Image (cartoon, rainbow, N blue to C red; front, top):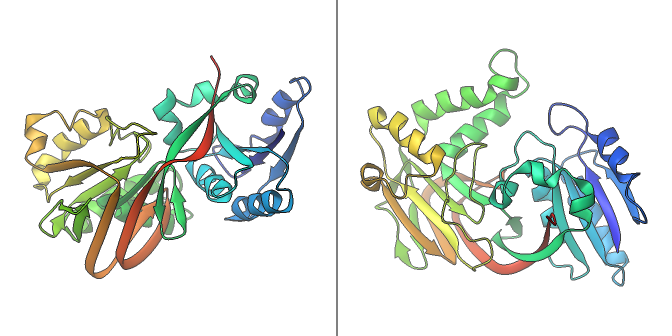
Length: 300
């Protein structure tokens, strides 16, 4: 097997290339190479080229970065039987690996190289794939704002998330879209936010899908109706801890379902986030593909 470490040098607080290569040199008899990404989508195109040109070679790709890097690698690996993937979570956002116990488990490269290969579900939206989540509404307003201001002084950088939340509180609390999950209506056309998850976390600290099972063929769909502003701090606290599905007060505002297909219909163009990648349209179909990708978890 050929082990290829896809390193995003812009991920996280500092470039992790030297640290990763330092660990690799200590692992015996490892057939590996390192690829440093240069531009967005670089990893996806590189992986597709490698796998298609060498169909008889078995590859394992390591997404060294955050959730964006994981998304790029997953979109490259999908459809190739000779490819599997895993993550070295050195980015600022590492939501997907929280399902398996968190980032620290994945930072020991020797345990990861000798890890266990499992089949995991993948969310598909047209020709885009997501391992972790598709979400829209308030969350997407926050994300779109973060992207717009991330390089601006004062409101950008480390403050970009808070700038996004402030914008969301003004313009992202009341959204319109008809949401159906396996043919069942999830709302009356209005909603605050909705998540379609295979992983458990979104947004860095929100345990949006505490009941998620990553290989059962079903995504966890959680739709919040429009919530009074005074109730939002209370709901955010429950949402962050992952207790919102069991809390009686939260139940007044939540519709929850496990589903294979989620359909969105809007009278106006809307934005959705596919593992951090923004797509815009009036109609979307989100399909959960059961056990569609080989993912490696560290061996204990």
